[in-house]
Length: 100
Image 1: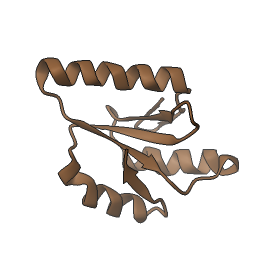
Image 2 (image 1 turned 90 degrees about the vertical axis):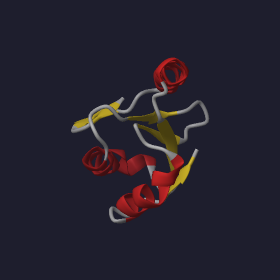
Image 3 (image 1 turned 135 degrees about the horizontal axis):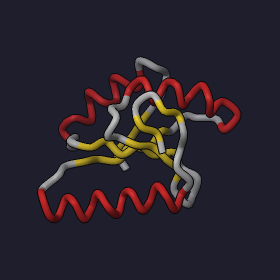
């Protein structure tokens, strides 16, 4: 789980339970969120990557791994129309992201 400056990534089950919770909240109260996948990361550089991601996301956003080992970020109160700006922000820190 990665919230703001706290650099800890959720394991798959924990991350996916957060995704499920957000989906339920979305249905109940029309919360918006998107998931992005970070494409160019190396396991050996996870601490450095964690610091970069933490500097780009808000406290209510979180990051984690899915069961396939993909590094994903759930961005609360964001939509697909925000993707170009999000991609630009991440690209500024040498990270390529796509909508999940």
